[in-house]
Image 1 (cartoon, rainbow, N blue to C red):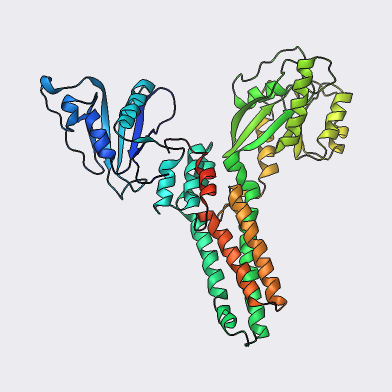
Image 2: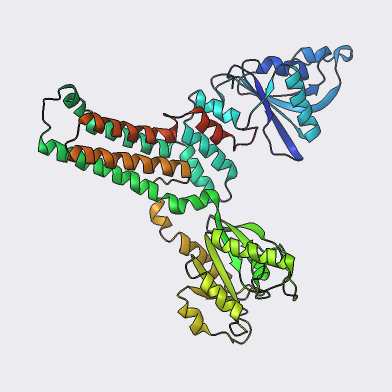
Length: 468
């Protein structure tokens, strides 16, 4: 990647809309944009200017409107252009943003004119990558940009914004500073190996390292729950045919997402959508009815249902409360025994025939619902949230980890600190202690990008959209 190139990309989502934005960033951004623009006034930093998008040539060679027919070029669209001068821009480069009507044809044409003028097409996430490489944001903040764009709920957005504003970075900087301050004096013992470390000094240093490691472990532990706000909680609705799985999905989503009929085996494939439960994004999956079948297509659907049980974060096992438990029901109870799951006893509007004693004996929480009437659904949603995020309110008082890369780096830092304390307690050479301490500092630095590699950067930014 050449940071001296001028890059271009469409910055708005694919499709048609009222407005579409094309972004140019780099030293030649203004020069490349000028021939395609006929503006009402000169571009000024931080100021939007109205104008026309034109084919290069004639008046398009001037960024000012001439008002003479003899010099005008073919008008393509009316636009608003904003110029951000370096270093006061998102990437710290000169940036020109052209806002046109959101026609894919127009936006592609702006990109084509930019490429003809000397720009190159931006790589995925290259605008944000430049912001990181130029020191405007650190790596965890760059990842928060992606999280903010991908946020499904307001709580997901709030977590991403906290990280984007540097909350995690500040916490990690404090941990690194504490490690350096508490252990820097040991460098003197490395320089003068004949000097013995006093027992009290050794114990105090070990105690401080233990406190820091515990802080790291507490931060790392928040990932287990907080990751659901970034990735979404996957919830599979499972059960035998015609117990109300698709009806429950439709009722939770408040729309007809799945086809509902009285014919067993109507659902042959996985159907999924997103649901917001108290700010928690839930990816809810309707599955094919689980039973013995000889139909090849239905058998494949059942295989996928069983696979969904294994892969889902949470399972809703649904049973028909108006019928006694069948062998297929009992087999399902056994399958969910070791899963994070709850039981939904459906058709509460009908006389109860199911054995609630057998349901209770399973040891899982159960909720009585009527998917058709919408009864018990609020209790069901609360049970989903509480079963997975029981302590969320308390954890939200501090910084949380939502990214697996961050969690793994913290675990490696904790392991290095444990080894450093072992070296110190066993009176091993301080050079080994210093190596382990440096490893811990580097692992923490990996999160913010203080320590990184091109391979890590490519992997992170490849997930971004091209225009960001």
